Image (cartoon, rainbow, N blue to C red; front, top):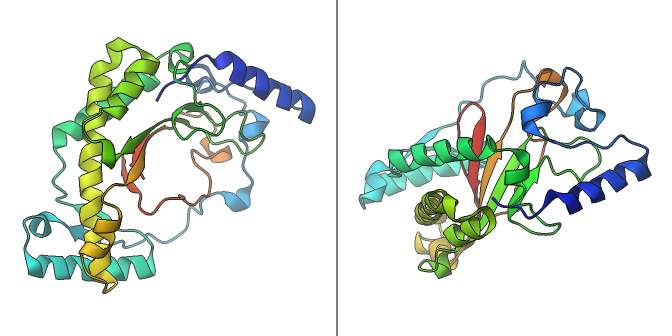
Length: 266
């Protein structure tokens, strides 16, 4: 969620394109969304694109409402559903999770505001090569082909430093004091997601028969990453992908999404 100066990143990316004999590309969503010709670097082979005729998955919903109140029977039922979902799909949907709707609404609104900023402002938080946090425009400079049609802003969070406001401070330091509310919302969001993740870990422990505290205790002081993803409009969306096939390198990913944006807590 921050960036220094895009100059170094662009120079590196441009040099790589020259070495590869490819035309330099800059992913500026305010411009590239209107391009009729998708740059070669963003084209994906047909075999890696989603199948439009694939059957709809009947992924089960896990109701956390009564579980969060401490009801033992609800914990058993929720863990049973999670066990079945993990064996069959590897993921599940949760409802009645207790996360404040206003916090979610504010997180989406502020995310929209950020990604509508001029590229030069977003690049004040530019992610450095090898870092887990900062702003990235389609990971140019990291990959030379099959680039995702995506912008991201990532921030690290540590549950062991709950009173240090690390998320808020990082965003304000990178983007400026005027982003204090922006940072405060995502600081609170990370704290809430950390708490929710521990509850899910309890259910995973129950589903595996090791007890509800087994994973919760292990992840109590977790280190996580909040990732905001934005997929700008594309004139030829059938040629590219917002995010290609991948596996998250984390123990648990909580994803909340709408039609064009998504944020992950990992």
